[in-house]
Length: 308
Image (cartoon, one colour):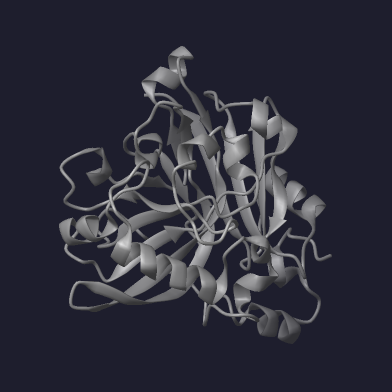
């Protein structure tokens, strides 16, 4: 595997380096001034809901396919009068909710891939979703067993979610696309030690992926109702002014035994790295996190865990 230190530029042949680097271009910065809606896919990786203690929330949710995701949930809705209207994304920090500092609630990293998508409408209906970029995402979540809605565990204020600054371009989202080569790694850095937190997983191992995921999401955009832990997405789209873009996090991977039993504390660093498996392995990623040096074909999210 290639070393991440120095990235592509470390290769001996400059022409080869340029050719390998060609698909990686500077991407947009998503800020509170960017018009978009933020949504997540619940239950798109086998076993995650059970580990997170959330499987019981979806017992009454009817699905035609037992491996299908369970719901689309909001984490950011511009113009929303409540907590969902607060821009929660940060590429640098996670600020714990007050109850987590006191120990009354527990917070975990949720390592995911996020897709930056263009939305196509026909009247009020979403008729197409066009993913344009992807990157590392932390759907950081409060373990709150009695929450009525998924979103109540997701956005507790500014800097409560994580998105890598470097999103990577996606020319299409079907078999053979750029994302097919990528894996999702997650570590917790604590006391100078790097602990595997999420099971290193291939993006193609999502239960729903490519066109199947997009078709499912379009159906949820247009038909999901305010039932059980789910919310009425059409109403939230209208509230947001039917934005032209959506940031969609497509599901969290399974935890390692360490990740399943350890929760975020001040002084930790939450690490989510989305990397091409054809060029790097897990040891490369661990070395790169310790050195804080990554190649341009890697989407990196390192967040210091803090309190206000």
